[in-house]
Image (cartoon, rainbow, N blue to C red):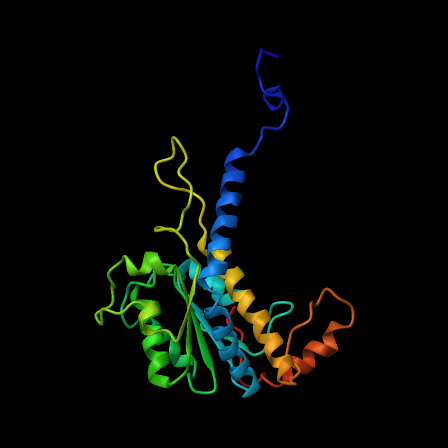
Length: 253
């Protein structure tokens, strides 16, 4: 082995994953920032969710493109609520810049109190999330936005109203993500790498959901939560949870 060579540089030895560690460090830093930035918005969003569940409403979720991953994150998950309706985007973001497209998705859904609406959009500027938020406001349902607030504020809206998602939300969950989403500059790579919005958004969303569960317990209500189907005895419990929503929630995929 040459002098001063790293042991991992030996033939067949594993190399240290320095860039991966940089990414994980960046995520930890952003999560710490998001924890502080959302000190007030997490309980505010949790209160909206708890009110919705207590009043037998649906938690409706929407995201376009990769933001749809956050809409799906809330639905049918172990430890999550049974009464979640995803407003599914079959175009997977291909039409998120087309004004009016998101409203066409609502032909199969009803937005009305006591439901609430969670909308995820990292930049918050495209017509699809803005249209969905406008429809939610017209329907009188509270809106929770998941977005990178500084990034969104630094961009002009692509919607004719001039609005961005955070302008229309009752509560904003700020991921504190960087402009363009990717967080790492890597020498030799033409653009930054390492997306952050899904990791950060999912963490904030689940923080809100568990806080809302605790709030319902404080109110003396059994939260209608899904138990993992990989645990024995879950079928009877989940049947009871889903039964109350079966006529209102329909499968999207």
